[in-house]
Amino acid sequence: MADKQEFQDRLLSLGLARVSEAAALASARLIGRGDEKAADQAAVNAMRDQLNLLEIAGVVVIGEGERDEAPMLYIGEEVGTGQGPAVDIALDPLEGTTLTAKDMPNALTVIAMAPRGTLLHAPDVYMEKLAIGPGFKTGTVTLAMTPAERVNALAAAKGCSTEDITVCVLERPRHEAMIAELRATGAAIRLITDGDVAGVMHCAEPEVTGIDMYMGSGGAPEGVLAAAALKCMGGQFFGKLLFRNDDERARARKAGITNFDRVYTRDDLVRSDVIFAATGVTDGSLLAGIKREPGWITTETILMRSKTGSVRRMSYRSPAK
Image (cartoon, rainbow, N blue to C red):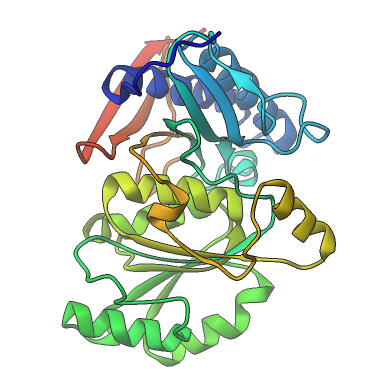
């Protein structure tokens, strides 16, 4: 039986970074090899092995899919030693399997941890997402606004021209009309092929990434991970679940969701203090990718705690095996 211990985010944070690093290192040999499944499986295996070393009674709430879809790190799987605080785990062992297989930018390993019952059990459906960085009043932008209205509102809040706003959008056919509307405002668009957790995180550091806002639809589980990152880095996030059929509505009901029209804020998705770790697999705007040199391999990890607002960047150099 698990100890009902307090969530010691400071003590657990370094262990979470090791989990993220292990998954990245495991996928390193598969960068650019064209095999998405093998890269993902290597990351999954390593992440699970490292998670099970932590002194936690963990439950995966955002994972690789339902139990019948994923043999490991499935939703509801118990991880950790079973001794220690009861926690929710949200993870994506390899955010950007295609990016890894093709050696394209911004592939990450991602994991978040929070006290039990505080992360939304998001079903595997689409979510309409909108995110901006820190320092703006609540309601500066909303999902009720049109894409053009959001650009105009953010430009007004920043005291700049709409031409000085850059929006990150996932490059998909479903976003073509939105992209056209955004471009009509004069805003620049950074299109990404995959990896919308990184896309949302870019908003929190516009001076580094050059991105002011993220919008568009993508996976709801990734929305929870992105909200966890913004809870640590600062910024606003809004999400609304999108359903294409009755099967997807049934998935939501199974996850305990009854209001299908609800707009979730960052703090609705992540209702308590959270710790978040991400390790670069391929080079990106936020993190350096894995570097190999004779006898050594180096990773870069970002480790964050919402309780303190601390953002720690760590370089980990280890002997190549």
